[in-house]
Image (tube, rainbow, N blue to C red; front, top):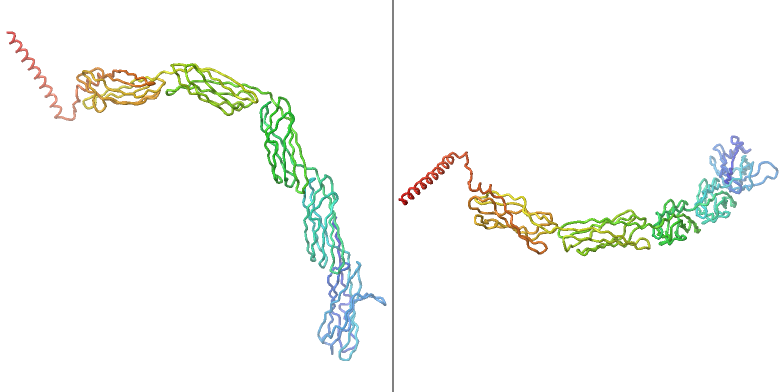
Length: 598
């Protein structure tokens, strides 16, 4: 509770316009003004009263001030509050201000008189001056204001005390202390030395209530006024402490008996202060917990932290997991929070299927195996093996297949014949068990066979050019493929390509070739020979390329160009000449034969 006290001060100048004048007509002197400081004194303050004595220009001599006093008004024997003597002479037209100090120990209104005793310097004539004065002293003190928010039990909170000096003078030797009931307060004492008039100072402190409820804290201010009076002021505030704690949240995935599953514990700090030395542990009945302890150096206010752990239920059913958080509060208190959840554990289901298919390519065959996990636990250490009496089959390993997922591997196979039956076995670990599943598939292969496809025969500069593709119609590679023109009575291999080395033709692929041949007369076909190796064995084939059209075109020679007029007349003439010569030769031979027969 704050206590405000006000001090009011009143100075009454009852006869300010009626100066006190001496009886001697040669001296004209008065108390023209009285200043009081501080204007609002409190009991014990040192009050300065400063009357101003003025010797007017109308005076004929100086005025010597023997004595100035402040006394109680009225009475034959008034109380005296201040007294000074032998203050010197005030010349004609001059003034003198005389400071006097007085202290008033009790509050109230004081009716006073300022009395001046002096004499004329010329004839030593004495004069008495009087000035009425009223001072009101009220019992006021500096103000205290304690500010502290509600807090969480065991958590250090902040508070502050403000000291406001409303007195007319500084306060000194200022000491502030804060105490509380069932509250631990750090930095409970502060020394402020001096607080100036109309100034304020604020002091911060920390407090911690270990138990929930309401708690009182009292601030005590001890100080000394300018008058040397030591006094004390108190103010009390009530704070409420609640039982607050960090929030714990346990999150687990679906669990299966005998299978290790991961989980998390999340700390959410809403205490209004940081947690330190936070330790999270996880335990459970019928559950084996791994990575069960995590330590966080600090979790700031308003932030969260997550601890990971792994657990394995021993059997199906309901199991409980308990997370425990131990931490230190800002004030150094140690707190513990626990949270328990029930985990529903499913029984282990071991359901694994494999899907088999054959893959053909190149000289090698392969079995594609898809492992599908239809159970509720991951598969580990998965081994896929193939066996066959007619083939050599490889194997493959898989690390992990999650529930509902599948993984595919390829087992390469080398067949010793045209076909083979392959048995595939898959073994795996699921939980603490070893599982097995198997299946079979058939592999077949067609040895590499080279056929000549897309053959085209065209005249090319007095010879025939045979173009086409060496196509592999089998499922294995053919190597060292060579295409050549067969030399016969009317067909002769010709440059630039009497033969064409194709090289390797992969399975189900082709490579183009060009070879050349010179022919005599019209021929219907040009024989081509293709040689190749399959699995180290040489094969030879002969293919007849249709060359009838190309041969006739080659025999006919090039066609005349109608645009060339001279050529148009020359060619028929040549042909006619040849025909005439032929006819003449036939006639001559017939005539000779007839002569010989005679």
